[in-house]
Length: 238
Image 1 (cartoon, rainbow, N blue to C red):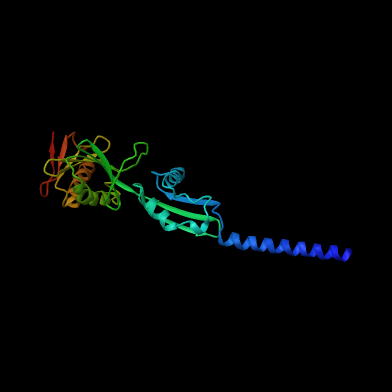
Image 2 (cartoon, rainbow, N blue to C red; image 1 turned 180 degrees about the vertical axis):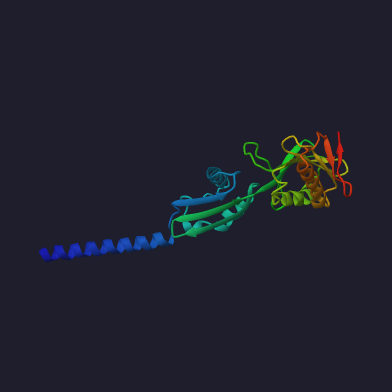
């Protein structure tokens, strides 16, 4: 009798081991997504907003069998979001989805004809989120989207890398005929550049003019505007 009990016990142990092995093999092949790790750059989308967007699009993978999750579908779906520039999604192990989201980066904000929008680093139009503050140059007045994406974006990127002028220019006004006016900080007079071409030479003239006056112990008079359109001279207007 004892021998029979031992045999039964051994058989039960073997059966249990086999069941565990079968379960482990099945879980490895058809594991369930238990965790979604989301990393993102930028200020326009939080992790919770990304999760909500994926749920709305029926793409949030948590709780789904790993074998049925398409990382390509997740990337394509999230890339359609107007604030997203690039997405990388991949599986890690048998239960984890990794998601890395690069948000779009605005370089200037346009306010023209009663509408406002950003131009991003890829020269594309980008919607504004009123609840998110961004430290970018404002461009106002008679500016079309093409001008904003081309000449003005070129200038703003140049300005961003210029340690002298970047902290001094607060906003840009575009008058009729593509006449560009730079609004300076600290109540300094605005600078009329005219057409945006040759902006480096024009701004160099303004800088030399200002520095020469400072060296002579003088301050720039309270001009209403500094006109840098003319060759080899600065015209101050009261």
